[in-house]
Length: 520
Image 1: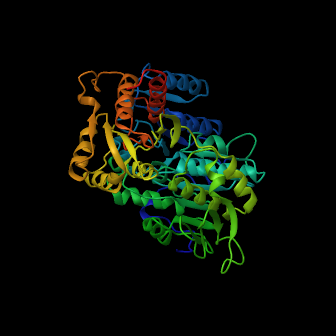
Image 2: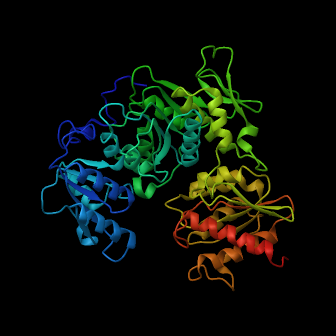
């Protein structure tokens, strides 16, 4: 770990990153700054609003035309009242506008190779993401510190666990960023927070350079969003930016050596420590498990020969029939970040006890005739699906959707790692045949039902809810008492559903209809 805080991930990245000297806090001179905001969704609206309030000359562009999105139209009306120019339609995103621009602020969904962003870079115009802008919109004095979390999977659960722990310690805290609440809203909240738990996606990290958190964590890294980043190397590089300029602790996953490598390569504040979390017995400067106890050997003075107890597995499990290993890992990462901020062991325990995971994350739906139905619709890539499947011994797996650039090697690895747990597989969605091919290669004896080839259901044209009724009925028919019917699609949902939440809702509703109707 390099101790030079003034460094940057790339020297070339920082040369043209300042549209005007001194834009490091909300009370700086933003007036007259000519800003182009890319995107009219939630984060773009928040950026335009904050900039306009400070006197910047703001133009917002979005590829959706007027009338194509009610939410966008409503935001456009509000921004128009605020004096912001809004241009809707693809013709406004094909390149930079004719007028001069000092700064581009892009929404996280816009890829770096988008023509307008490429043209901005070619002209030497700085391109910031919403996270970079939010960091520079913090108060000049007394700003809430950030605790940052990224990872291919688990980051939303972890950041919400962290916020629960911070609140248990009596702090005014919230979770923000990729978790849902735009980070700008949290930073500019009229009642300031004591500390903010910030979830950062690889899209958001790609554009940030200045964030300097108290503590940071990368939970895991596996190939994902390669269509956006262009390569795994670029994806990995983006994830590594979470550690840049960290003050107290860079938290890594002992089971994932890539996360420790990212810590070693990061340029951090002098004195920053590398802190590991593990499902095994922790070594010095780690958090881990001793029997069923969550143990801290990192933030105790006598860590050479003792540990602090932060809770037990029972505290995490609550009323659930079982607890997934990756859920425990998330809790240890959240605890490490909280401890780095100075939170005591009892507050860690209380925060973990009171935490309840969001819907669609290994959520128990029903147990009928000894068959347990579990909704993990959030498992939208092979890495997440593997973690989910490895939480159970005997599974009827429901999978399929849009694979988001997942490779054949990733699918092969997924099937190979879980094949001994599979009772059967039910497939749906646009890319289901690629999963079927991986199963044929590496688990040829596992029964596979392709709902898309059913005589009664056409996945291409039937509403997703109708398909899910058929999926659940077929999965239940393949299961026996003691099995888990698990929705862990390993793919995105937008081929059939509005989002993974809608997919999970459809699954849960279909399970309940099946449970209430005639079975077998």
